[in-house]
Amino acid sequence: MKKHFFIALFTLIYCGVPFVYGSNSILDGKELEITYNVNRIPGPGSNQIAVWIEDAQENYVRSLYASRFTADGGYVRREVSLSEWIEKSDWANASKEEIDAVSGSTQTEGLATLVWDFKDKSGEWIKSGRYIICIEANIKNEKKMFYRGVVVVDKQTVDVKPGRITYSESEDDLEAGPQIFRDVEMKLKF
Image (cartoon, rainbow, N blue to C red; front, side):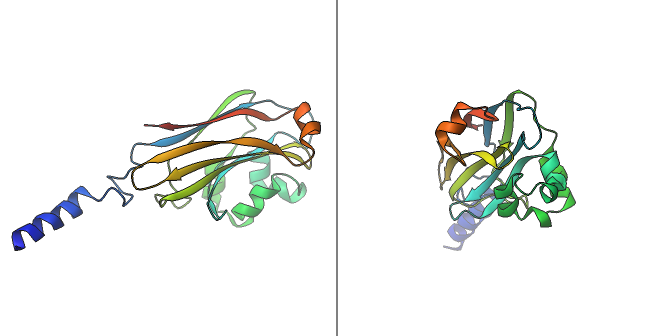
C-alpha cells in the first residue's frame, strides 16, 4: 500500500497535474498572437494605442503594448489619451520596469503583431477562466475606437473567440472616417 502511495505522490510531484499551471501546463508552449493593421492619422491627439488583458470580472491582468507618449506620462497633459486603459491599469502607479516593458514608439503603418504568453503582470501563469483582449485607440482626441476579443482557458483547452471593433461615438460617423486599427485577429500559437 505504501508503495502505491509513494508512486502516486512521485507522479504528482515530478510529472505535474495538467490543471496546475506550471512546467506541464496546458499553457506551456502556447502563446496568443494578436495582429491588426495600423493606419496612422495625421495630427495631434491621435495614433495612441493600448492593448491589455482583463479577466471576466474586468479586472486588469496585464498590458501588452501602449504608445510611448501616453505610457510615459502624456495622459497627464492629454487626459483623453487612452483614458480607459490608464484607469483600468492604474498606470499612474505602474513601475518603471512595467512602463519600459510595455511602452513602444508609435506603431508604423501596416501589420502590428503582439504576443501574450498567458502570464499576468507579475509573470505568473493565469488561472483558468475567461479573459478579454482589449484594444483602445484615440482616433482624434476624445474620439476613440475599441476592440474586445475573448480567450477562454480551462483544464484542457484554450478557446479563442474573436471580437469586434466599436466606437466612442456614432459608429456611422467614425466607421466611415479614418481608423487607427482594423482587421484584428487572434490566433493560438504552439
